[in-house]
Each structure stands twice: as structure tokens, then as C-alpha cells.
Amino acid sequence: MGTLANHSRATQPRSGLSLVEVVMSTLLVGIVLVGAMNLLGATVRGRTKAADMVRAQHLAQQLMTEILSRAYAEDGTENGADKIYLLLIVVGQEARSEYDDVDDFHGWDETPLFTRSGSLIPNTSGWRRRVDVTWVDPADPEIVVDSDQGVKRITVTVQRSGQTVAQLACLRSDKYPPLSP
Image (tube, rainbow, N blue to C red; front, side):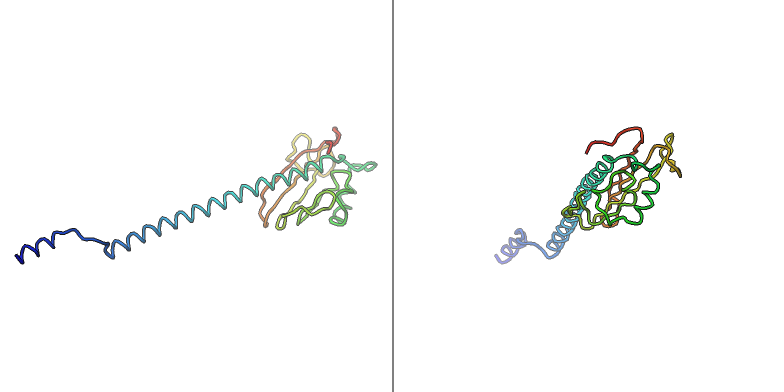
């Protein structure tokens, strides 16, 4: 009878897990968890980048609309060249609300960002807006020229943490009145 009892114990199924099975299960769960965390991080970064792009485009359009609502050139001056030179000296010292033509915005560079009236735009720490106004060839607006030929290219660049997020360029002609604000 002793041999029959020993034989029945040997064929009984085992209960519980071995140490190897526990280690392998833990390893697999760890690999899946790391992959899930990487995916979550990539998703959050992607959404943040998309939100930044939308906000940067809005900030660029806001400033461009403000610029395009101004006259082509300073009243009473020939082609506005003297105003561009003067603006480079005093940029940042006068409010944009005083600007009356597109040349006044040449060289505008602000961080943090402000509205036309000078109010701080909330949550714009780390953001920067720059404006460049150049005379261009009417036949080929990609070519910058040294004198006014009736067309200016206005470029608004928006950056966040030193990285360009949006850039908006428009052409302004002396043949058409400014856009209404």
C-alpha cells in the first residue's frame, strides 16, 4: 500500500506558481507598462505641440490683422524709409496704439506678449513675437529690393521657448486701402 500512496502523490497536479513563472510574469508586465507610459508621454507631447501651434497661429493672425489695418506708408513721407530708421531706435518705447502705418511695426519684438493697448496677454511667458517689414519686387515678392516699388512683405514670427511655432507672411500694396480693424 505504501507504493500506491506514493504513486498517487506523484501524479497529483501541483498548486501555486514557481519562481521562474513569477519572474517572467513580472518582466512581461513591466515591459507592457513601460510601453504604455511611453505612449502616454508621446500623446501628451503631441497634444501640447498641437495646442501651441493653434495658439501661435492665433497670436500671429492677431498681430497681422492689427498691422494690415494701418496705412501703407507714413502720411507726407516718401516711401516711409525715414520711419523705418526711426523705429529701429525707439522700438519698445512707444505703444503700438500709436503706430499709423505698416512700417512702424518693422523690428517689433516682444516677450511676453501684449495687446495693442498695452495689456499683458495672459499665459504668454516664454512666447515671443517678431515683425519684419521689407520692400519686395511686385513681380516676384520673394525678391527683397532696396527701394519702395509699391509692395511690402510683412512677416510675423511667433516663437515659444526659442523655437519657431508659427510664421505668417502677407503682402501689402500701396494700391489698396488698409483693412478695417
